[in-house]
Image 1 (cartoon, helix red, strand yellow):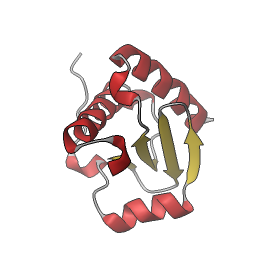
Image 2 (spheres, helix red, strand yellow; image 1 turned 135 degrees about the vertical axis):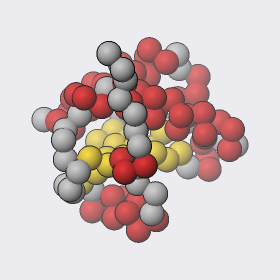
Image 3 (tube, one colour; image 1 turned 180 degrees about the horizontal axis):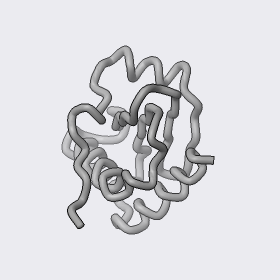
Length: 112
């Protein structure tokens, strides 16, 4: 079975869309992630890590790891809505399987 890709239609890129998620979205958090959710047409994702998180290399690696987890579990996500994932400091030190388990449990709360 071929894994599904995150194409450009799935990714939120505009600043006003990120701002709308921050201000109007529902917030769910765990030890290493914050997810902002909002109703919307289609399924779209945004990935972020603040500058307090570290240098650009660290922030980009955290976002790549988040994107990979979402790509692997995209079939189990809701079919509609906008989701924004914010990485907290400490994500860069965790092994991938622990990140995946934590994010999957948080996504189960989103679906509920």
